[in-house]
Image 1 (cartoon, each protein chain N blue to C red):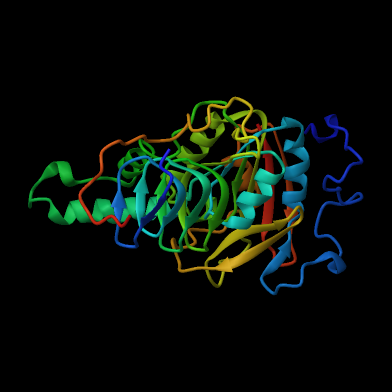
Image 2: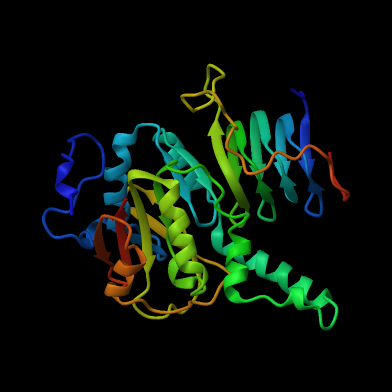
Length: 102
Length: 233
């Protein structure tokens, strides 16, 4: 787990899973987002992948293709199985060419 | 029809309109000008409540209020904005066609082929996965070739007993909206740039045909003449 903040700017494209304390997306991400604190999807964001976080903020206009799950106070996901992000449509690992703000 | 097989709890769950389905009293309507009462949502929630941590698939735009609404009720929510995906797919295909060399027979595609290709990547979930599917302003915007294939796919994704809530316009809408849930019986229509042209107005009989594989249905007509249709697998 990365104990930092990850930001994908509006013209940024990421093909990878992201794990961080806080994640803020304004660009396009193909991959799962896992944040111990919060995820923010901006109005220009488009995420294809699952989101696991304690808090989430979604601005109108954001695009999401995937599952949203919240981390409970005891640290578990809000699913009974604990297989938090098993159903995503893609799990790309490589970072694609393009700008990426971090 | 098997709507009476489920007994209604007396908890804080949404209550059913006394005897006649349809719009609830105006006094319960939300204040926002773009909000409307959704008796279909009320009934949908009642139907899926027994699923506990059930899985919901929202085929519209993602909104904070909708996500939190289901998560706070213990549901697991997946979202896939099908109209947006379809539009992006068509734009990409058009670009491919533009870049194809003249006389390239492989570049020729029919609407049926496009629909099939789109569904190679869209709506990719395990079978019998979802307890509920939300599809406001979707089916009457889809291409005639795509619609039956989408319906077939949705049917396979749903668990037996699962419910689909869909809306159908009784006349061509003046503008395009996305839908967000405000509470258990109210939704807000959010004006949005047109993602797709309203394809056609379906008659009630045609709607039943579209959902032909589903075992029962219920329809609610709002004051705005939008029909909310609820179908059980």
